[in-house]
Amino acid sequence: VDEALLQGTVVSIETRRARVMARFPGVVRELRAATGDEVAAGAVLAVIDSNDSLQRYNVVAPMAGTVLARTATVGEISGDQPLFEIADLSEVAIEAQAFGKVGARVAIGQPVEVLRVADGATASTTIERVLPTTRQNQSTTVRAKIGNADGRWRPGSAIEARVALSEREAAVVIRPEALQRFRDWDVVFVRVGDVYEARPLVLGARSRAAVEVLEGLAAGAEYVTAQSFLIRADIEKSGASHDH
View 1 (spheres, rainbow, N blue to C red):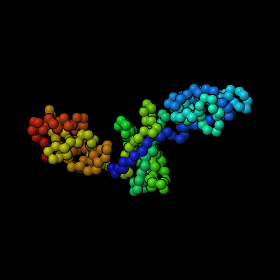
View 2 (tube, rainbow, N blue to C red):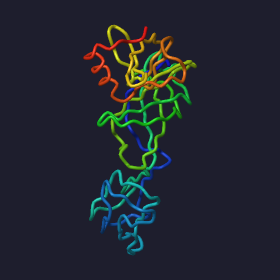
View 3 (cartoon, one colour):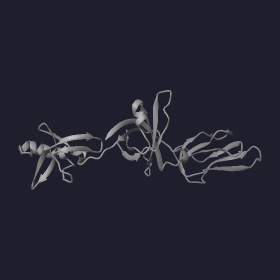
View 4 (cartoon, rainbow, N blue to C red):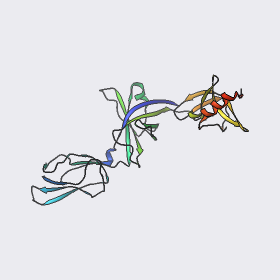
């Protein structure tokens, strides 16, 4: 797999975002939601005394979501500026920048592995949109959506996006964590009876998710993935043999 590593951030999705305005100018009497609050559709966010009718009316949430911003202050006059910004964060997007030749190769539908820099959490998705290159920094913006049911992908969080620019079929692939360096070979460990043996491999293309095996392991063969380094240490201590 030919890959590119892009840097970016988590953002809310435009179609899942709303700016809440006062219907009529008036004095803000109450504010019932703060930044970070979860609100239901129809929940009262603010109470306004209308300058025109002198009647008190409620400003309600047009959708369920998280309050991203509150700009209103009790006692001020509501005008043309939004009082609140709300977003449904059950699904979010990532925006990443591709520079130079990479920007010319990114395309809608390419697979993306997203890593959240703060804690290493990952998600898989595909590119949904590629925006035109900007003149300011000659970068192309890549967008993709990811599920956010647990709410942990927060807007503004830094991410890394590993984009598969091109793919090809490989007869045999292994998981990267299974691969160990053993006596000058790249090996995986296979179980033979009650012991484990090191199988030297000739490797091909690599990605974050897979390593191509050109020689040394048959398609469908079982090999050790979890804690393979412990098996390597045991074999090195015992001086056990390996397959050629």
